[in-house]
Length: 373
Image 1 (cartoon, rainbow, N blue to C red):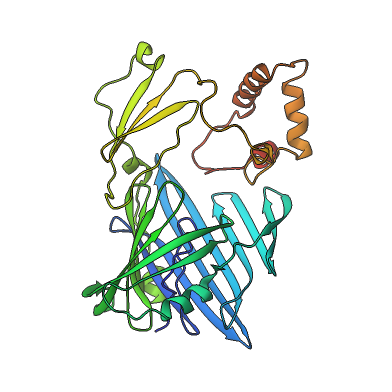
Image 2: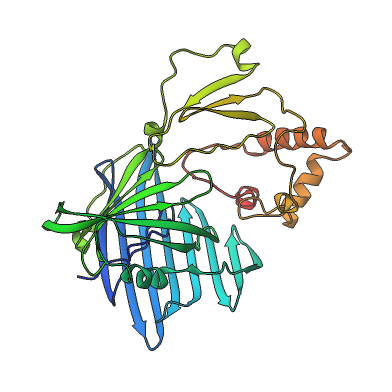
């Protein structure tokens, strides 16, 4: 039975696992309710290793069914040297496709979204690995309780390299759709800036993953190894967004909304400190493990970092140099020279331009909104 490699590629939040050539299916559960399927495949042809994975899930948002799909493939040498990758993320009608090729210490990338394609060239992070390189790295560490290793995992979906710290745990008996197995518990901490993510996997001696759990917007996402029929069984309805909300003890009045609001945020994971940025719109201070966040009614001048050149560059969600968007922005700000007044005019224009507001679309890019009839 062939499985995925022990490392998570966090594709939405996608997982990457794999091992010697083979194909494996997983059932995807959210707080115990089946919401989708995950499949992984690894092939070796000559000196090239191709790892492919696909995640398909469904969930509800305010009574509207939302479908989400992510797929990712990577090409590497048998020794784990990165060669190329493709990442495709679909949310309702929106699709983002990222293709990259590693050329020495450079990464050439093509990003397509909403009918627009952008070419980029970036530095390849030194020491960063894709799926096969991560698999080989995990095999070099014996499955001895207390053992640790650390790798730099490149995430094609975000074009970022993430530090991953792995700790080998004890052997446990784990219930699976096909029966009970004795597996080794492995914990991994993904060092996403300001918000470390802890994932737990249960693996065998070959590093095949049979079960994996990870946090997802306040709830637990679980992958269980099973056959294709099990993975593709009907999904259960689950309103994940409803679980991310907290009831307010009372309604906030206009006087409260017009001044500073203060929140006390406590971590669920006490092993990793929370980090929330201090900006012109919010101030943050620590009180033990808690964070006290104050949201200010008006922006505070001189607080927080100044905008960087990259902040005004087009991106996957706001294609600010696309002719369609440039023409609309010019129309909305005709005769206005002040930057603050231009921003207000653009905000008012967008509110009236989007006449059909619905939760069924998911998250569309600016160019998709402009071109949607």
